[in-house]
Length: 219
Image (cartoon, rainbow, N blue to C red):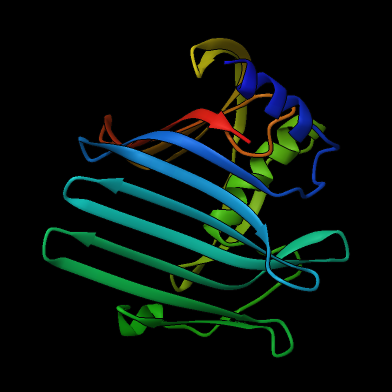
């Protein structure tokens, strides 16, 4: 996998510096095997689009956020979350209006999750926090965030628990492992120096794996 190593080197930059990428993942969602892809691409002006798509034989999941950089912070502007499992479909849209300081949600959302939710400087959505964790672990910064997503605001804190070897595209790489526990839910994230996204994200509920994304290649 010389291509992977060369690509990782090319992507290596100062933490927080944005560069386009395509990252391929092996995905396991609720026991279903599939493929995932994370992408970051310019969206015009000072805007970027960050997306995650997961495909299996019977399910399709897609999340995206458009954001900008303001006063050195990543700021969500809009988002979309859609899923299709057999014949069940769901689609939600988010709007972050920084001029009025409010976030709202539309589509397949419950009335009590439509907002508005007041915005504060530094707020991010769940998608952006994925990249923020990779950025902040490498910069040695505290892993504390205020997430504004799915019709609510919530404080999230992650803890570094040590170093582990992780396999990416058949090669072993050293990763920093961070975790967060919220009741019966646990999230684990592995970060490799020089990569702009987590090398692995594992979410568990009641001790059982819900979603597992493992990086295979990035370019």
